[in-house]
Amino acid sequence: MLHTDLLGPLPELLNTGDTGDTAAPTRVRTPTGDDMWLVSDYALARTVLTDPRFSRAAAAAPHAPRLNTASPSPSSIMSMDGHDHARLRRVTAAAFTTGRVARLAPMVQKVSDGLLADMARQGPPADLVAAFAAPLPVAVLGTLLGVPPADRPVFDASVEVLFDITASSDEHKARHRLLLVDYMAALIDHKRSRTDDDLLTELIRAHDDGVLSRAELVSLGLALLTAGYETTVGQIALAALAVLQGVLPASALTDPALAEDTVEELLRTTPSTPLSFPRVATEDVELAGVVVRAGEGVVVSLLHGNRDATVFAEPDEIRPGRTAPHLAFGHGIHRCLGAPLARLQIRTALAGLFTRFPALAPGEAVVWKDGLVTRGLARLVVTW
Picture 1 (tube, helix red, strand yellow):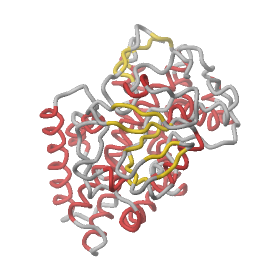
Picture 2: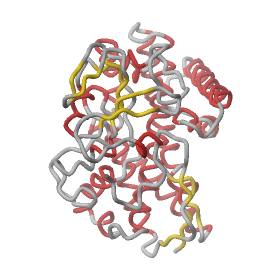
Picture 3: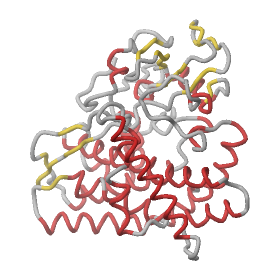
């Protein structure tokens, strides 16, 4: 089982599943009342995330078992398998190569420095989430995609609903989901008459060349805009909390020789995404003696896989230099495309934060977000 004070509230199925004593999948009940298999073993997790018999497309079917009441869009890259998924992934992969992300580093640094300067100017106390962790990814993703700065509050106010499990009504979630779809469609139409140099403009050209359908273009734009937002906000705040609670010294994040490996360990031990997207078995599959029947749903606990003691010695400890890859960004064909950009933002944010404010300290009780698929903090007040 997991032993740490940093986890905060978890999706209910992670609290009820027997995840610590056996490698075999366990049966869990989701908030929608559906039964699924929960995989918490590291090796089995990698199997589920790569085996084509566990389908994301099947999980988007109308009557597939669900983690929440949201209906996945079949035209989303996250709801595709095989050729269709590869086609959409090829269109976007070039934007997230190591070299292209490295060219974004000066922009990320400038935004981070500006937000920290604003914090210093306004003086303590400050809510680190509202003042720093949230606006950084908003600005970075907005710049990458070409979202006008004046429009960013539109999706900032609605994006959490896409990760919602229980916190809001079905009507509330549906309304905000439609707002985001309408906004992305309008932004695409606006950018058609321009010659901007951004990722969304490249996707529009791919649509015009017949590579993407209109529905795929809108879904892909939304996926890129939202998937890297809530997760990165959560990861920055969770990492800062680890330092503030004494789990590791700030120097591990400000020392260039240590920072990269330390961030990987923070991603492993306290990931902002504790669960994979569900998959549905397309045929009977045996996993560690358990037969997952065709049509049954499977979800992977990335959180537990990352702390599998058979793979990571003393798994609750931060130990830079581990060789086994963690699962925080997933695994296989659906592994997060934006991982290099997320890593850049997290490293830049944390190094800047603790360099600018070496005496940073918690100012009041932490407020955790609740009801989301992702983990994160609603409020992290700090002083210096």
